[in-house]
Length: 63
Image (cartoon, rainbow, N blue to C red; front, side):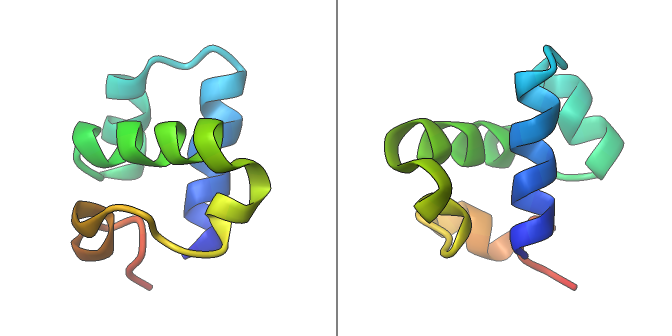
């Protein structure tokens, strides 16, 4: 879901550590890092689609 990925990016930009983001959003830390790296590589376009196989299966794309 785009909103959750946007929340991950926003929290990261505000200085929240990756493990804390994962804990608060109840998603694996690896998926948090995948979203952050995808945003760093692709900017806002990365929020439109999942670029990592693990993110497809995570809570970041469900709901």
